[in-house]
Amino acid sequence: MTPGNPRKQVFRLGALALAVALLGGCDDAEQARQASATRHYGDIAFEPCTLASGQGMDNVQAHCASFEVPEDRSNPGGRRIRLNLAWLPATNEGAATDDPVFFLAGGPGQSAVQVWPMIDGAFAQVRRQRHVLLVDQRGTGGSNLLACEPTEEEQEQAGPADAEAIAAFARRCAAEVAERADTRFYTTTDAIADLDAVRAAIGAEKINLVGGSYGTRVAQQYARRYPQHVRSIVLDGVAPNDLVVGGEFARTFEDALALQSERCRQLPACAQRFPQDARAQLAGLVERLRANPAAVEYRDPTTGEIRTGTVNAQTVTSLAFMFSYMPQTAALLPLVLDEASHGRYAPLMSLYELMGRSMGGAMARGMQWSVICAEDADRHRDDSAEGTLLGPDVARMFFAACPHWPHGGRPDDFTAPLASDLPVLLLSGELDPVTPPRFGERVLEHLPNGRHLVLRGQGHGTFGQGCMPRLLGRFMESADAKALDASCLDSMTYVPPFTSFNGWEP
Image 1 (cartoon, helix red, strand yellow):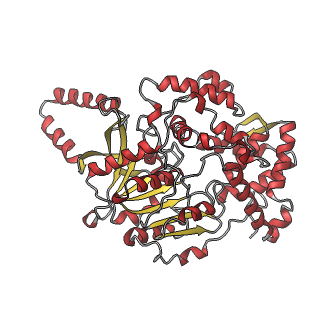
Image 2 (cartoon, rainbow, N blue to C red; image 1 turned 30 degrees about the horizontal axis):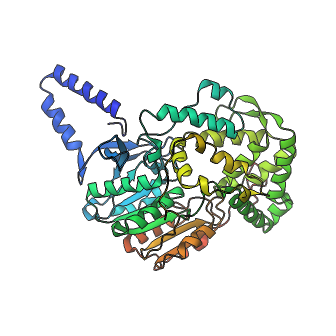
Image 3 (tube, one colour; image 1 turned 90 degrees about the horizontal axis):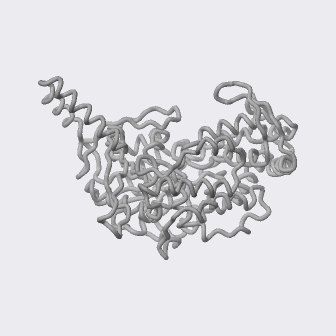
């Protein structure tokens, strides 16, 4: 069965029935095989499936199911939507505990089922004795996806994003999905009610929440509404409940650039190769390209073919922002900027194309709008990005769809901090450009049984870094963050910048 695709499921079942009718005596054997493949977790029937991210990662064998919930819980007799679920049984099922792990993906707009193959290895020890449940949040992946494909005209006009184009796309997309979704009911508050319905259906009294990036908001909101059903929480890339998602990117990016430049100055080879700090270098390049965008001939990063394009200020800032998420790509940034400052834009353009394609389709934009327009847009202040490289336009574009996208609201206490005695492990990358360590410290203030680990030299997302997989396993066993021996993280180091395209200095 293809997860989350009821039409294809019906087609396959119809084909199976036809084959049985033609082959006569095979029906009993086939029905027995189908029945033996089905497994129940509580009241939900799961079928074998394979999870694939599409990013070249290893496939993961799992069991998949769909689970119906009302779209509008105030009208239980109204439209129902199907949530796409995946269950990864504990590798030592005989010793499995009765408190599974629920993984909550980021974005907003990522599919938990699609993301999992990229992080499965980080949870090898967690999975020894615990089942993992993946729920595609409503509006993502196989859960009534809120996304629209650009028209041919929109593709032909593709260029630097602007608020007017985003608004027009949002109007068209809203009309396109209106027949199958009321986009007002795709918020974080709706999502946590779905999670609790799944929890109850599988028969778990308590669950362990693991959230990454935006998923940390989902975890905190669930723990505030249903504390009696939470055993422990892991928050990686912590977003405080009062954070305006998208509204602080300009400031947090500047902070990450400053830290990266400081690390460069501490390395003689880097300081000599790049005497100008990254922010100043980027600012000069942006000013030049804002006045005079440059035509460039570059190699297509996928095919190797020679292509032509235009590099502008947004090309540069977008690439710099995307590169700053991971230390391995951040290490390339000074070199790429230095090349561009000397008029050699080809490497920058190739990498920009590569990053854009790898991220394309990773987020359900409609679901993202349903969340941020209900929970963040009215709290954003335009002056919050004054004097920054990205400026206020990034946030304006982030929220440009909101006047044209039907959206709901949020509870009055939505932005209140999670104040709880629950055991919570908070993780931050030292150089994270969107959820810096200070956000984790803010959340920790209200968690007396919490502990915050900052991973040296790391960016956004730390589940799989260094010895973190082992620490995750130990935390899930003990549910005691403060007792963890995290000294193994002391060996983590800063990834030095490339001084040439051959690598960094030895």
